[in-house]
Length: 396
Image: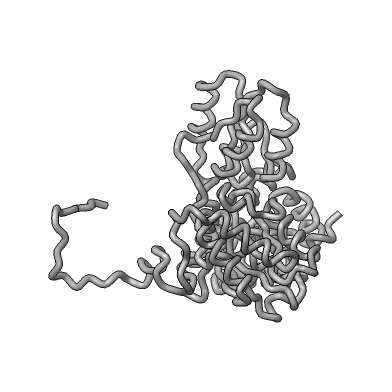
């Protein structure tokens, strides 16, 4: 695409951005999307030197009424106010274990707050400081698309032997679909157990929405071949697959991915090995298959943290996951050389929407008795999504 710029903007053109452009810019609401929703009210200025003190004062005023959760990928300025930190599922469980907290402030993204609402009591209010903090991966599978996919599988004569397994990084609607069709949820740390369970229930798996976690788990952990996996593209008729391909596959992978982990490449791995002799490469299983295959170790965010905690002094590590986490573990281990796998800076842009001004506005609003940005899952969706989550909790 060729982009042309001019020295002076034309003032006589009445150019209106399309709804899609507004959505991507976070300027217009779409109730069926996790993106593009602005917070009401006036946020404090990012340059306000008193933001830290304001957050501390509001949190102190709320006392035990508020419980703040911070995902590992959050900024340090936000993490400092978290009562607990962790990955998405750990945080949702932590919220459920604090029934006395009236407000659960989830510093993460939309699907995480939904999961917390599903697992907490009806009396608790789950709040997301910025409603525009969505997840590009979760957005890659809508309820309508997945329902159409199930119709395709039904027409191919395989739906009755397919078990859906959905990654935690999915919307409540997708979790509910999974629960309705006898499937389970998984995390990056228990995906192997979830797939083993699914293949005990049926002959094939529909894995949503991250193709890379599904492929890596099937091939690396369960010993399948790449030929056992097919990629379902919701933007193509019949997913871009023939009936024979659908019938012959063990793993039907949804065409979704993480925009952060998808950036790491085999070149990144080769380059860091040349630059840092003796380095160990540790990556998240959301990375591409060729990256995972070339790495020394693969694991979830919790695994990465524990591996670096246990690593000997003087060891060298290149980490393939979100940059906020990599910088935090590097600062925590000055006796080890810990670098970001890629030369390109790569924050999770939607996670980074939760900043200190949004957190201050949220806490001060709650302290004033005004509940803002509450995340509520409707009872029908919650019923089946919780069923899928409970199947995961029951995994051996």
